[in-house]
Length: 283
Image (cartoon, rainbow, N blue to C red; front, side, top):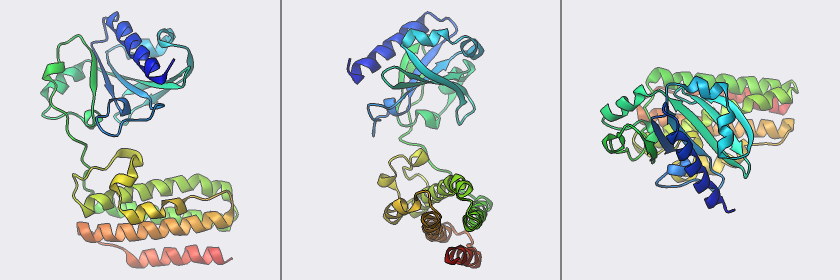
């Protein structure tokens, strides 16, 4: 069976199952499978919104998940909006994220002038027992980034500067495992600055995807060129070099972002922290 057939079968199984559940009032596909542009790969998961007030029932007894195929693994989670979700992987390596939304949110969808960001790149109504699909407002083209204020921007700088100092110090102390564990946090800070820099360079409605998706399409080329250097193997010297590259990229991007956004920039503090990184590399 092809991947397309598997996805089609999964869709029909979910729709048929939800149709028999009186408490499930609306089923909507969002995420990469519903994107109108840049659709996901053949292994992209299916993000399913189930509008029901009885999510606890589905969390308590999960035998219903077997109605859709042979379940390999399932874990509980929470979305960015704190909605409960069950993240499943079925045989054939098809991932399905079942997100449970309160039924009261349906009325909220009808009343909104524009849809929440989760709908912004495309959605497909699979089952509508409330007759609301035609009254849901048109989707936005894409979600807009909120411009940080001065305080948020300075906090981001301070967090990155301290994190750089910490990683440089533990690398100097030969605590490689600890350093590698903290590296990911620094890369996340770099990604946030890449996003802010792209928006400050263009405007705050610039099409920036979440979590760095399709970063090559929207970020500054000099940031893209530096990305391979931000990763290293499991060694002190390689990690130190990657840390330095990460610091220098962040310094350039944050400096330009500060200038474009009208924020202050602590150049001297950056110089001090960089000097410490170089000092630990010489030992």
